[in-house]
Amino acid sequence: MSSLGYVTPQTMHFAEPLPLQSGAQLRDYMLMYETYGTLNADKSNAVLVCHALNASHHVAGEYEGTPKSTGWWDNMVGPGKSLDTDKFFVIGINNLGSCFGSTGPMHTNPATGKPYGAAFPVVTVEDWVSAQARLADKWGITQFAAVMGGSLGGMQALAWSIMYPDRLRHCVVIASTAKLSAQNIAFNDVARQAILSDPDYRGGDFYEYGVVPKNGLRVARMVGHITYLSDDDMAEKFGRKLRAVADDIAATGTYKFDFGVDFEIESYLRYQGDKFSEYFDANTYLLITKALDYFDPARHHGGDLSKTLAATRAKFFLASFTTDWRFSPECSQEIVKALIDNRRQVTYAEIDAPHGHDAFLLEDPRYLNLVRAYYDRVWNELNDINSKEAA
Image 1 (cartoon, helix red, strand yellow):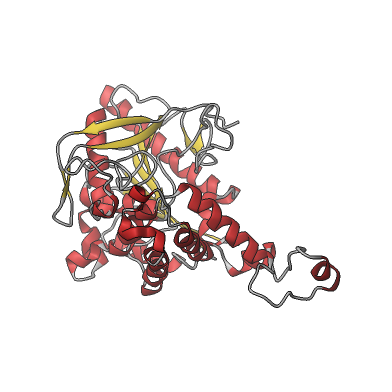
Image 2: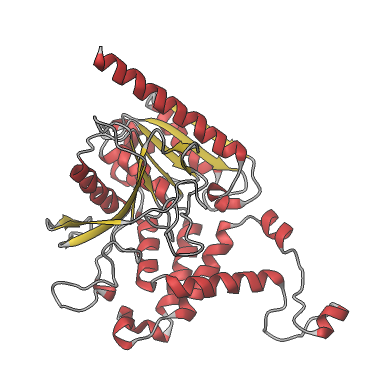
């Protein structure tokens, strides 16, 4: 049982159109979100947690009557945890275009009366941040104590510091980057092509045909999942172990010499792909991976990240993991250097962990203690400010 206990998602409706970076706009949309902890009287203890690719607003806690429904960052967020909900009011928001409650391709397009499907507009990290800011406005939160995220969530936190420099005191960026490498874009495109070439994709309007492009989703997830793990982690978990699916393999250790599943790593990847294809939406996958590709705030300053971060006002905490080859420590170090160029207060941790990119989600006491120590500083700073204002 999560220490937060049972939680309940909420929705907020927005009638005013949201202008998107593409030039399109989204009207009459909903955002799904969850909150944990209590918002204080002056609304200064709020922390926004931004989610990664296949996550959602369900950051922590569990859903009553739903087994295995623990939030994706439950080890990080909760009473007495690194992000302590006895102190902070934590908000998790599901991004637009997702398949977990906020308006996305599966929802009805008010212009046609049919699901948006492929007609759902392309959204960017900056579009998500603009939508999150509107929800904060509805809560009356003018400044977050911190905005935090890992991976794609870290991109959103970084975008917050650039787009709304006065609306956050601290920016917490975990296992993230200021832009994708060509290799990362390539991996994303291979995954998208797997979906687009699935006959059941039907040009994105597969909902009308009662089918799901599961084969494409399976392959997309398998490709993505490989990039989340390190070579050392895969070697330790699976190595070259054969599956004992037939007596002859179990007894002799020889292959079947066909294209079936011989190795444990093959079995694991196919299991992950099958599971993913049951709950994730193909159009959402296309949208989110494109948002990853497009994120490059320095493009507005000729690629100069130092100039890009000159307008920031927040204090920063960044963490990377030594075996993360998707968003390597060098990606975080580039951000750290740009912040130092601008004389920003920045704390950086490079954690020696064997788990690759997925390390930001896992139980690593060193990592969680570093985040806890940083939020202790955030809390003490907040109390000092409130004490001076009261005096």
